[in-house]
Length: 193
Image (cartoon, rainbow, N blue to C red; front, side, top):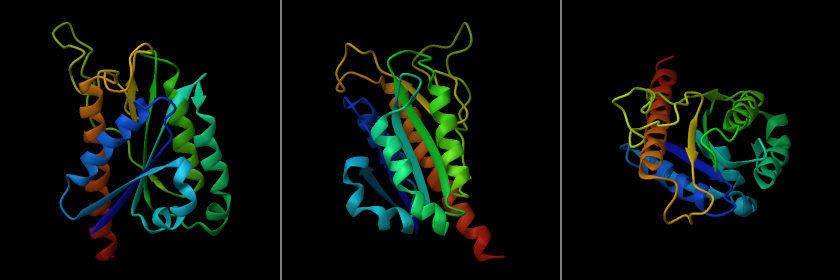
């Protein structure tokens, strides 16, 4: 059984919707338990994260960086870092912004570095860009062409029931499934060592 936790912050509901898609993807993998944790509820969930095989992290990108509440979670994990309680856990990340670029890569880099500091194993997105030819459309998976993690875009004048678009939600599901599958593979490989 693989335990996957999705820890996220959402300012306006768009990133929460994406986190729910990631959760759905992880939970779709047989023998996987997936848990959704909002950063504001972390006080009661630190042990859930410590017991997880994989932690998928997500936050909106504000002003070229992760949102402040998510950064607070990162800072609050320093005692866990000191004890290396997340060492060798699988890690991945996703982010959302109002613009197609929105400087989201900096947020994914922040998440990857954070995971590396915790001695975690980073898993990127294995979906080829879905909107980079004359015959492709914005309806394809990975329409923003990210590989380090999952990027999403939500129009700032649309509520979370309209954005992010379906293609981004499907890409989020793909990330959740990939991480859960990788966590299972890692369990099998360490069981035989």
